[in-house]
Structure formats: C-alpha cells, structure tokens
Length: 300
Image (cartoon, rainbow, N blue to C red; front, side):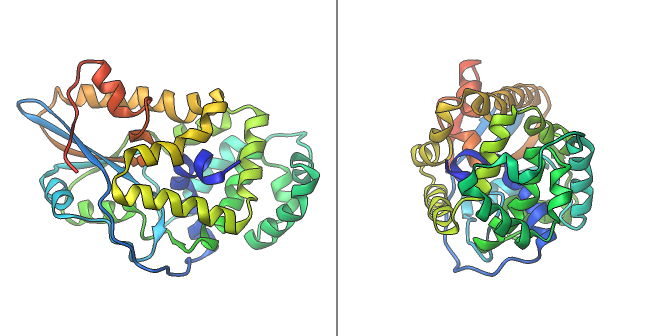
C-alpha cells in the first residue's frame, strides 16, 4: 500500500503539526509549478477552487500570475481546516480527545510481524515512547509517527500552500475560514474500521525510498496541473477500499459542494484551497458541482 496515494493528501494537513513537533525539515531543491485552478461564478460571486499540496519542500515555487491575480481579488481564504502551526500542541490535544481508548493491544501487535522492525525505527525517530502509543487508537498512533516520515522527505511545515496563503491573507487583513474544524477532520479517521486504521499505520512505515518515489510522482502531477495524473497518483489506490474512498473523499466532497453552491448566494470573491486530490477524478468537487447544475471553468 502506498502511504501517499492512500493517505498522504488528506492527512498531510495534520501531518504538518506532527512534522512541526518533530522539528524543521531539511531543505530540498526548489521546483517551479503551475497547479490547477477552477472558477465557479454567477453575476455577483466568484469562488476559486485551488488544488494544494499541504506540505512542500522548502522554497518550492508554485505561484503564477494567474493565481496571484485570483488570490489578490479574493475577499477571504477558505481551507480544509485551520491548523495553528505556531501551536501544534493544540491540534495534538484535539487528537487525544478522540484517540484515548482502554484495553487496546500493544502497538507492535497491530502491524504484521515483518513490519515490526520498521515500527521500532519509526517510534525511535518520533521520540514518542511506545507505551504512550499503546494507549492510542491505531489511526492516532500512526499520526504521531507521520511527522518523521514527512521530515525524511525534506518537507517544510512552513512551506505548505495553505500555510503560505494564510500568512498572505492575514497580512492583508482578510479572514481565513475553514470547511471543517480540527475535530471534524480528525473524526473521519477516528470512525475508520480497525482494519483501515492498521493499513494507515503500515503505510506510515513504508520504506523511505518508496515513499519518496510516490511523493515525487504526486508533486510532478500537481506542479504541471495534470488532473488525470493527480487522480491516478492520489486516488487510484483507494478504489479497492470503498470505506476509505467514502470517508476521506466522497463524504467530504459532498459537504464541500453544498458549501460552494450555498456560497454563491452571497456576493464577493473567495479563494477555496483544498488538497489537490479532492479536485481530481470522477468524485471530484467540480464533478459534484456540475452534476448539481453549477458551471465550473478551469482558469489554470
């Protein structure tokens, strides 16, 4: 299973908090990019839909004149959930509210025997004692180990698209809103079956070289605005796991489509920045909107 195909996109927003807690990631070579962007509009409202990568190598170049013009025209920014990067402990606190359960088996018993050495390595790297992980539900233990994986990939918590955009909008005196609270987004993972949670944990233990290759493919597709490539690299692997597709993509996109359609009743311009995987494939946010009679136009 690929960590980044199946889980990297939706969980990376919270992985940013974990990566921050693990320390600053090493810088990587700058890249240029022109990610895909769409527009939904009526006579007095414009909603831009911009696909993001939540964590990026430091100094990755992803802005374009088209994007900058759209962002400058927006009255507000709307993101998936508002993570306070300056206080990752607040996000971790929300996790612990959901994740503490009595009578759980040791974390080592929740992975296949051949994965246990990799688990021990990940635990040592995270600095979280194994007895503490034993008390957490599997999805939450995986989350606390995820920051080390992102750090190994050279991802900088301060360079993610949402982090950069939040700073820009706040500096301009514009509001930053969210589609889901931290607790609501974590709740999608908390409600996964134990089997799916264990898949996630084993994905976190993926070989670093394999993870780097998968992430490289994701970045390449995103940076070119290759929506088909994004659908393949982000979502294709979920096709065999209906529970994950429903919880992490379908339910959330349906909620967001209602929000976007409703937002057209209010005048003004809004920039909506969500993980690029939500804007790719036949279950994309744009597809849902179009099925509801909303015109969606690609502008980048």
